[in-house]
Length: 485
Length: 94
Ligand SMILES: [Zn+2]
Image 1 (cartoon, rainbow over the protein chains, first blue to last red):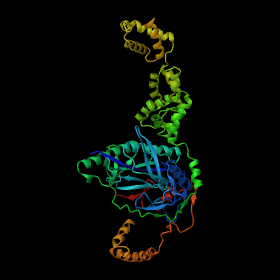
Image 2: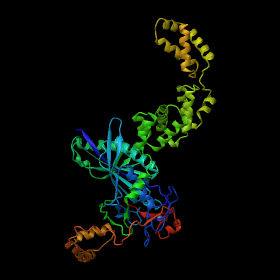
Image 3: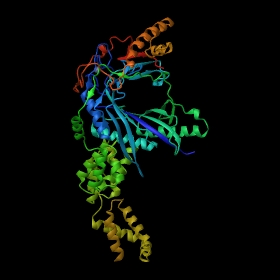
C-alpha cells in the first residue's frame, strides 16, 4: 500500500524584545538562575501584568509577512494547567481571537512548488526552565527538579500551520523559510540551539489518494532542521509498518520523543492528565484594538522578505531560480552573497558557485552557519579576484579555500606563504614544455599521427612539473604552438 | 441537576484540591444552586449580544518595551520551601 503523510507544524519563536511580555524583567539568555524575575513573572499574589507593545507589533509584522489577516480586536486568555514551570498555574496565551489568522508560505522544492497554509499566529508567554536531577536528566526517572524562572514570561509567538505538509523535506523547507522570514524581520533570533525556536510536528499517514485522516502523533525534541526531517521520516516508516502488518493499534494519539542518537521516536511518558485547559479571557489584561492605519503603517515598515529577495537575485544578478532559492534560504547567506558580489565586482554567478559549492561543503562538514566561520565576504571576493588576475588557477583556489576557512587568513597571505602563485611567466612555462616534449617523444609522435588524446596527456605532464601552478591557458597555447612548429 | 458529583471531582482534581466524600456532596449541592442561578441568562434572547470578555471599558493598556528592576535571586527564592543552586526545588513530576 502506498501512503501519503499529513504533517502540520507548531513553531514557537521567542521574540527578541528587551523586556518580558507582561513585566519589565530582562530577557537575556544564559544568565544565572532566577536573576530575571519579579512579582509578575513569579505569579505572586496582587501583581498585575501589562502587555509589551513591542511584542504585539512583532507578531503583527510576522503575520503580515506571511500573508495573514490581522484581527483588529484581539484578547488574551488564560490556559489553565498544573505544571511546575508555570508559577501561576496558568499560561497567558490566546484562544479564539489570536492576533493573526490565515496566512501561507510558498515553497520552492527542487522540481515543484507548493503552498503551506498558516492557520494562526498567537502571542503568549514562555514558561520557566526545568532541570531534572537524577534519571540522566530526563523527566522520567528524575528524583526531583529545579526551576529557573528567567525564561518565564518571555514573549513567545506560536505559528500553527495547516496540515498541508506532505513530506519531511517540505517540513524542513517550511521551517527554514519561516525562520528566514522571522530573522529578516528582526523579531526573533530563531536559534534552535538556544531554544528560541522550537518545532513540534503532528504527523499521520493515509492511503495515497484518500482524503480521510489517520491517527496522528505529536513529535517533540526536534532540536535541529535535521532532527525534524529525520524524526518525520522515522515516524512515517513506523506508522506505515504498523498499518502494513495489520497492527493499527500501534499508532495511538500521543506525544513521542525523538532521540537523535538512537534515531528513533518513543512514547513520552508524562503524568496522564486531561487536556482540559478551561480557557477564559484574562480579566487582568484588557482587549487590544487596532485601527487599519496602524496595520498599514506596520505593513509599510516590512523589510525585503526572502521571496522578494529571491526574485531580485534572479533579476539583478542573473542567478538561476534554484541558486537564488538556496542563497535566500537564510538571511545570513543572502547577506554574504550580496556583500561578496559588491566587493568582487565580477560575475555574481562565480560568487554563487563558490558559496553553494566549496563553501557549503565545508559548512556542512563542520556543521556551521555561514556567519559562524572565519571566512568573510572579503575573503571570498579576494580569492575570486586572484583567480581573475591570473595569480592563481581555479584548482589552486580550491586548495586555498579550506585553509582560509580554518585559519581566517586572507587568500593573498596564504598564496605568498605557500608559494602558490600561478606561473604565468612565458619563458618559464616555455622551458617546462620543452622538457615535457623531450621526455615524451613517443607521445609527441602519437599526437602528430592524429591522436588527440595525446595532447591532454602532455598538458597533464606540464601541469605536474609546475605542481599545479602553471597557468593553464598559457600552457595550452605554448604547447600547441610548439607542437605545430 | 446542573452539575454532577463526577464533574465536581474532576474539577477538584484539575485544581489539585483533595476533597472528602462529604465535601464533594456539599460542593455539588452548592455549585448546583450557583449554576442554576447563572443559568437564568439562557432564558433571555442574547443572539445579537456579543459575549462580554471584560467588564471595564478599557482597551490597549500597554507598556513600552523597557527593562525595569528585578528581584534579587535571594528575594525571589525567599518564600521557597526548598531551594538548590539558586533554583526552586519541586518534587518529582512524573
Ligand atoms: Zn518579571
